[in-house]
Image (tube, rainbow, N blue to C red; front, side, top):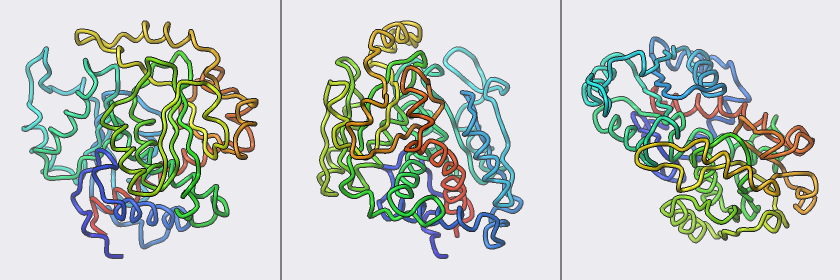
Length: 349
């Protein structure tokens, strides 16, 4: 294996990487999944540590990164910034420059997870990751931040390609995604979510030649820059892109349905995240739920979601737990994708 050109690279957004580099990750992830405990992988990170900064809690993210490090022969260390003396806008402490420089002497990689309620304005989480990337000499990996979730996007693409090929026990064929319609539809709910996962799905789907439709009520527009990138990707990879404000039309002919709530652009006011206001507003749109009637409009479509799912709001149990749901396959693929990312960026294979 000669993928060492990715050694030391940061992964903050998939759009930062070339398409062939994403292919390398997904191809390696597929092999690691089928040959999970092969000796060729189990010592790649021997004696190496991956630091994990969790500003926000998680279920799959911490579990999958810790298991990934272990299966590669390394160690993942859980860190909570609130237990550390780090400088913030309100408190004195160690700067990002100093923390990044020192951690680079200790570990071989640093993951950071910082979502909507830990920042005072959209983009602050992204800025923090890029500040660490500026000063660190080890790879900075986004474990989900307020703008992007690259590991989730890659796991999504891997799962969809498996479903449209021969199934999860066979190598995913990325060519099967070409021409498939990806519907990313807003779902009402009580979990006020950032834009990271849906924006990453837009980017990854468009780079794998999927026709992307984003549906949402008026007032729930996403980042204009991400919309522009998606349009450019679709143009480059011979796909289409549209945005609509209708709860059912996007389902027509869809092959992948991604129903997930996301916050409105008004979620931040004067440095404060207005969570309850966003919840109250979102619950006024009960028609924006993915259910069996809507899925019947698709072209035998599959349901996908990064989890956790707000069942009964974003999607019904009948769909989420139904025979055309790929949620657990995509969730599993987080492990294999992250193993591949860590091996390529930290071991330089």
